[in-house]
Length: 338
Ligand code: SAM
Ligand code: SF4
Image 1 (tube, helix red, strand yellow):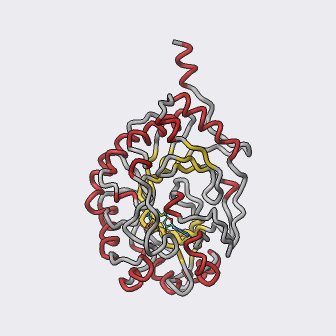
Image 2 (cartoon, protein in one colour):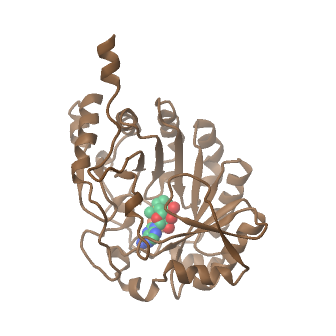
Image 3 (cartoon, protein in one colour):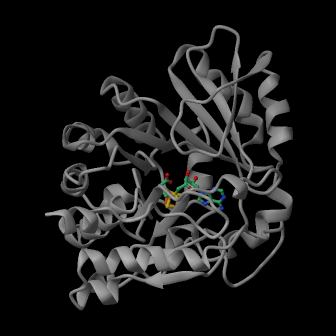
């Protein structure tokens, strides 16, 4: 009995820089129903063969091992996670894992209205929805597909389902949507939303627009402040790297995420599982370990725990990402599990 108990308690995950790692982002697919200019090529990616993609059961096995080393928060992302239409089954599986406290979803919102109730009932706790523009013509330019009305309906459905806090992610690009920052910020006045403006990050797919399209978060804040005076506020919690500000009396707040101008590596608490079962230690580095091969060869939960702990030795201290960098390591977000 005593031995079994000792067996169950594994040391919490921490890297060699003493950062506790308690947050696992899981890319459930590399596929997407949009083709955002900053993320993916117009023709899509060479999609993974279905047999390479982890099944929900395999993902839950990894989550179980992760929970043993103190991972408490999970985010499901992609690609577009809702293209796996039965995603609620995965949410249900993860919700049943002892120790998991928070199951969040990042989605483009296109398929949300149909799925939200099942996801919530299965145990989803929070949602982030991407919204880069309020104009249909712009939406088509940026996402290379129509669908703004569906995304807006997804936002309303999430508010109605009372899944809070609802965060809206907006990638700001000069020449594409910087003139809408104030309008997007105003959405927070009447609605309980946290609109987070993200500096565009350089990946191989957006090399051409990086230099011209990049706007720093300081300039984004100035654009937002044209809609009213902003004061610094504390954020809604969660694992985000955003700094938050609010208009006087607003129901929500805006945030800025600055991976380039104010990188947040010091506070990094996360690792990423790709759709094909690699554990990536840094979004912008190639350091990873393969979990799928041992998993399919019959690895036990203890084996997976040992692999997770061993992976900490290769988690880098920080990324050295610079604007205009065109390293081949910077593959499409979708491929690496944004
Ligand atoms: N498809 C979902 C979505 O769009 O929300 C989830 C995956 S997406 C890769 C996750 C987030 O990464 C989205 O908010 C998206 O806007 C953001 N993103 C993708 N490429 C980016 C880039 N090059 N720079 C900054 N953010 C990016
Ligand atoms: Fe798809 Fe999200 Fe990438 Fe847009 S940002 S192409 S919605 S994965």
